[in-house]
Amino acid sequence: MNRIMDISASIYPHEQTIYYCVAIGSFGALTDLIIAVWYLVNRVPFNAKMGFSLLIGGVTAGILLGFTTCLPFFL
Image 1 (tube, helix red, strand yellow):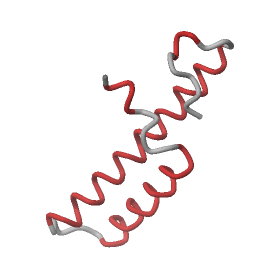
Image 2: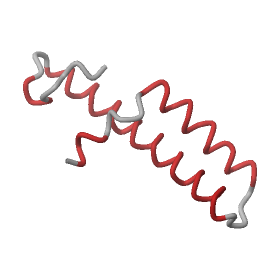
Image 3: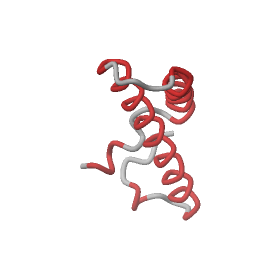
């Protein structure tokens, strides 16, 4: 998925759209994981069903979309 080293050098215009959509999904997965781990580590009173669904959803989406796809946009 990360074969495009420079997003502006992509050959076809739809490659940029697909890459941006995958990057948004990757950011959501990373955010879900960070929130779930924060809830578990700090022992904040929360709904256990919500916390574990965030954890499982974040891992699943991260595996499907890639955990680091969104990170180059923060540089």
